[in-house]
Image (cartoon, rainbow, N blue to C red; front, side, top):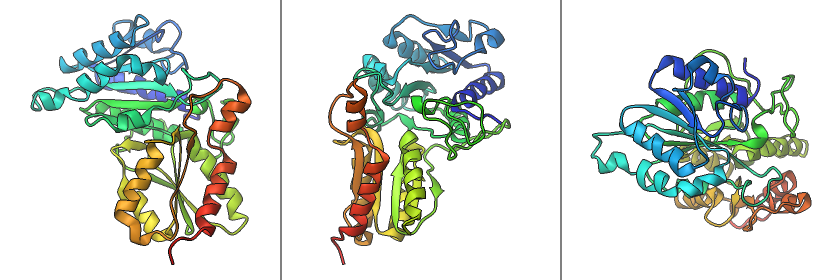
Length: 343
């Protein structure tokens, strides 16, 4: 069993490289250091430096090479040291990777995976962003946000085997977190809500959400680290007699609205929690779609809990102030429970 996301991703990359000789990895320091978060540790020793390739410090080059190699028949897995750096390669991602399959009339595909760590961890404005909403807005690319080792392993295997470009975003605070009793811990400590990954081969289809906790009173949708905060809130509010249904979308493009809508029709209430900013963010998109399809089922206004519309500050107390928290999630749940706007 693989207790941490970093180990689960490492073992999955190795398994996929053994299974398919077309799979190779590229990125900064992925040979010499095992990558910024040790996800590629040991791969160069097993597969050699033709299949695990260190690159210059150039996101344009990393993604450009990956796109070209994929069109030529390879299946590259490109690692960026921080998701924030993907903005240096927006043309390669948005204008090339996302569009080439359609522009070629399906005669060529772009089976690349772009892996990148995201999330606020005290690294200030240019190393702390959550970037998923930018790429939800981009037709032609799939966006994956794993929240535990089990999902990370199954989703990465599915992403590597997919014939479309996939942006695979990994939250920094979850890399080394372990399930209860596990040996590996991050700064967040052990999270009992993390499921370890088995060693056997499996995939999780992209675009299928998971109900992490069933409930009757409020639907709470949370991504990555925010999911774990939501599950903690659910435990605490259960002591008050409030039953939360907690959903992990796992992929936000494609987004499994059927599962979310089914839950909202049951509970009549919705809270969406994400670490990207409020305006035009993931939470706003989910709320808009629920209003479109489930308006008659809503018993109160849906609530969004997101990062404030500001660059992430460096000072710890300031960072804490702008980010979602358990208290903010609980307050949103109470607003939707007790501020009824529909009979």
